Image (cartoon, rainbow, N blue to C red; front, side, top):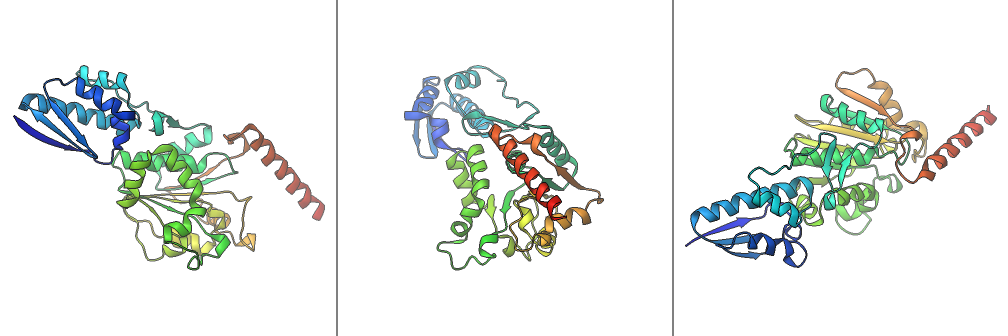
Length: 318
């Protein structure tokens, strides 16, 4: 009798084992000739060589399915174990499958254009009002790049304007200091990546967070790098960030020029940067507007109302 140990790599055991081991028990029932013992992230299989090889092949297919879709149930297990070539192809318009198998894809024309431009450009700007999903779709593209092994890491950064980039006096390590500013990015990550896998990504440096002010001197190769809330970066900060680009990297810059929190709004590097970089090949500048808003239906009306009020104030000042 042979023994084989199978390790779960970057797969959440809870997802593959199921609630109260319901998935695992079902998998074991389909291999009555084997003895299967699961402990944490390792599975030991005892039996004859042919059956062990069949189990390992099917188990790898199950793991691949979870890696792609983040979801598993008895029906899928039956299809993968009992069918020679199960159909697990991902539709072309789906970027990734989030937690519980939720398909994540473009929800408006501007998001779709950003996805298309990502294929042929290494630097992308996504500019528009809150609620248009520009950051969310950027995170989804980054997660897809990791899953498809097109990149080795994701780097997330955002200006911490409220503290003037001086984070030292805050308690905790750098991640804890930055968490309040990066919460919108975390919200997207938690929606797309199971908790255990996300924890592994952070521990192994596959997903990194970096204060914008601390990125000086770095070269970011084989990465997808996202600068969020770029309207709050100065021109020098934006230039410093963009010149971190290394080989085989994609940089995505998102921002809303109507929500500049800098003391002097004219110092926004995003406003000036898109003018300076407008005609360079390999750079894509994408504009979102209120018709692209995908949050609650009232968000579009709120944004429109504030824009009208701002325009009225400007005209009255003239």
